[in-house]
Length: 220
Image (cartoon, rainbow, N blue to C red):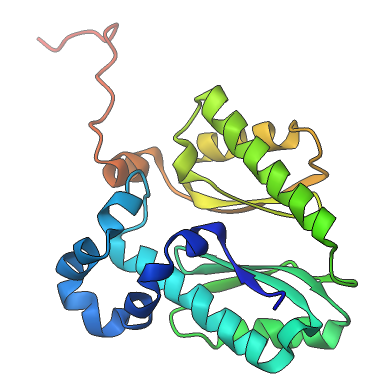
């Protein structure tokens, strides 16, 4: 099977059943999530717990639909972040590219689709290994640069092209793009961000607002 889910999806296989039941569990999510260790995985993630698990379920459903129709005839990766779905990989023609998008958009709760499939033969094992290496280098440079919380930006690499997802401010987005762009082996950077305001970011991070300007003239 050549179709795969995101790296996060692999790390949380034990959430698959729960993810498929999100509509039923929405009212009692907290208790269920703790039961499968979701709390630890949600550290520094700006998505709320229901959306986090919904994203996992959407990836699984989309992959299942695509794999059920095409199997190992194509190579497709599906990543969902805040219900925005990114599709990458290789397919043989434009008709299949459009059909894969249709199969994904029919998954419940999908907000939008970024169809970045290339019309080409499936990538080699070596190519995919190199993509994984590039992803790890970009993530490591995010941490070294310390310009934003690295967990706020999801990195996906396909054929040397780096796709960046996340709920980020414009400043964070620009910093992430610059770091990724200047990483060895990266051919191109594609933004798939959802831009939020600094105030929204502070609320999601549960951090206090910055102190007032010390130079400001005090009120009398």
